[in-house]
Image (cartoon, rainbow, N blue to C red; front, side, top):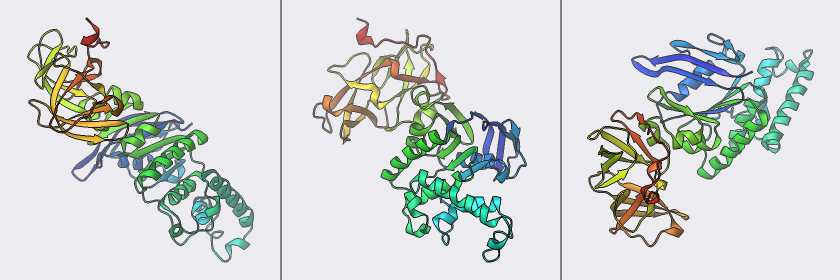
Length: 387
C-alpha cells in the first residue's frame, strides 16, 4: 500500500513561512497534482514527502507508517527533477542502472577495476542490466542505451530520468515540474506518456506544476495551493466548475475567468456593469458581491435586457474554431473576455457594440472576502426559458 497521509505540516525558512498547516490524504494508486504559482510551497511539500527536507511540525505517513526521520532511500519513493539530474559522463544505461548498483552492490563491488571479480558481482550486474533493458523498452529508449545525455533531445533526457526512477520499482513517484524544460509540442506528448505510464504501473504519482493544462489533463485530483495553504482538493472537473473560493476560480481557466463587482437588489437580482442579472443571489438587498463568469458561458444576443451585458469590442483574437473577444463594459476597469464559436459568430470588429447573454446557472458568486456563496436553488433556469 502506498497511500500517503500528511498531517498538520508546517515549514518556514527563517522568517518566511512556506507551508501553513497542510493536511492532505492521497489514495494508493492515485495521480494527484500539486498546482500553484511559483513560491506557493508545492515543491517544498514534495521534498518533505521524499525526506529531502524536514518539516518544522506535523507528520507524513506512507502506507500507514510514519516516515518522519526515515532516510529518503528507505521511503520507497522515487523523484524526477525538473533538471533531469543526469550524469553527463555516463551513458543512458549507466544513468538508469545507478540506483540499482547503489542498492544491490557493495562499495567494493562498485569499484571499476576489481569489483567485477568479486563473488556475486557478475550475477547482480546481469540482473541490473536486464531490469534497465526492460524499463528502457517500456519507455521507447532501448535504442539509446549507449548514448550520453549530451547526445539526447530534451524529451529523451526526460524519459531517461523517468526510467532511472522506474528501475527502483518505487511505491510512489514524485515529479517536480518535469516538463517545464520542454517545448510546447513535446510537453503535450509527454503529458500523455506520463498518464499512460501511471495507468501501466498502477502506483501513486504526486506531480508538481504551475501549468494548469498539465494538472487538468493528467490528474485524478488536483490540490490547488496559494501562499503555503491548500485552497481546494478535488477532481479537475470540480476544480474548474465548482471552485471553493475566488482564488481558485481566477487561477484555473484560460482565458481567465471574468470578474465583475455587483450590488444585490431583490429576488436574487444583482446590478453590475450597467445591467441587471438574475443570478439567484442569496443575499440582502444592498450587499456587495463579486460575480465570476467563464468566457465560454456567454453567447450573442440581439438586444439589451435582463441577463445581457453590453460592451465595446476592444480586441478580437482568432483562435481557429473559437474567437476570444475582449470588451470594455460600463463601470469596469479590466477587459471582459467572451469565448465564442467562430462558426456561430458574425464578423466582429474593434469599436463595435456587442451584446452578450449570460447563463445564470454558470455565474459563480463570491462574498467580499472571496469565499464562495452557494445558491439555495442551484438549478436556476435562464430568464429566456421562463416565459
